[in-house]
Amino acid sequence: MNEIVRTRFAPSPTGFMHIGNLRTGLYAYLFARKHGGKFILRIEDTDQERKVEGAVEMVYRTLATAGITYDEGPDKDGGYGPYVQTERMGIYKQYAEELVKRGGAYYCFCDKERLESLKDENGVHTYDKHCRYLSEEEVNRRLAAGEPYVIRQKVPEGVVSEYEDMVFGKISVDSADIEDGVLLKSDGLPTYNFANVVDDHLMGITHVIRGTEYLSSTPKYNLIYDAFGWERPKYMHLPPIMKDATRKLSKRFGDANFEDFISKGYLPEAIVNYIALLGWCPKDNREKMTMEEMIEAFDTDGVSKSASIFDEQKMRWLNGEYLKAMSPEEFYKVAEPFIDRAIGDAPWDKRELASLMQTRVDVLSDISEKLAFLNEFGEYDLNMFVHQKMKVDFNVAKRAVKVAIDALEALEDWSDDGIKACVCAAAEAAQMKSGQVMFSMRVALTGAPVTPGGAIEMAKTLGKGESLRRMRYSLERLERI
Image (cartoon, rainbow, N blue to C red; front, side, top):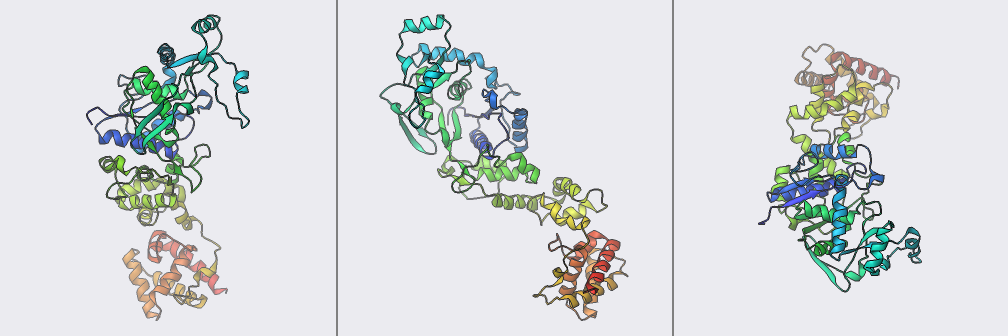
């Protein structure tokens, strides 16, 4: 590419950052970085009625957390600002009036009642182009009289608007199927259709990357470019991300909120990695990639035309791979808040707990459940002691727990190796299988069906005093059977 690539991400501050929206920004970022270009952040906040307080800050926070850096934006002036639409209001009126002069738009004075009357039997509204044919004299008279108006696009008649999409190929729409839509509303605010064209042109955007919901409306935008005599950008439309086979992920219904996933204990880099694969596949079919690797591998040939289904289980697996690949220190840093939440002020060794957790959780929020046994020990289901495959029943469990207690009471070396050697020797002396003793000991220590480690790790974590207290309690309960 000879031109300097300039892509943009233009979210509306109407709520949380939806995964589909973030993927659009990510692809625009990857494409710009791959081609040595610029990535621009623009806030499209003209829909003031739906604007949510704090949503703009959430956009900045999300991009920073996701590792998506922009070259220009509201807080990084690159000479093409302002980068917030409500700060560009005078620009849209100026260009709308310029488009009228060029014959690409016209003033429309139709009131609400007349427009309502144009709906067909199915409630579908289609403007009948009434004001398109008003004489220049009448238009000037009504403007001078101060009549309210909108400015509508003057779609050429009898033409086919075509463009080549980078993913879907040639797209054609007959102008007969394009309505003379509103470009500038009566309150002076632009519609999305107009503002994004003006902004993309004035900001020098070379490649527009967005969802397929705009695939069929892009010919309408191109007619605006043509009417101004502006060069059209290139387009890449992305297939939707689905909740399942029939339903799209929806921001409206709270689906797939980026910050919710962060609070659940997903790593930002794992989320970004996963959403990159929702609609794109690198040539070598890799799944786990750093941002730098994704930039290097990103190619429009790998972008799918088909919708992708958001599979949280797959993202859980990928997140687990990221956790396992961390150094112990890195894992402890991200796990510590979740460990704190699980154990409170209890005096357990947090680093030891982290080392137990690293290969046993896929998402950091799993830590609370896996560490529940530390604080929640009391009445539990004794049937957990029964294990047919290991040939453990209540009598075997009773013997096994007693063997473990008797052996460990005198143990001074309370380390993994020390505990293991002691229990194995005691099992052999009692002519029991070490597996039977270890299994029974683990249940007696935790009262839980699933734990983040075996008997040795649990005893080491709990400490000698607490381990013996729990096993004696469990033995007392077993002896009542």
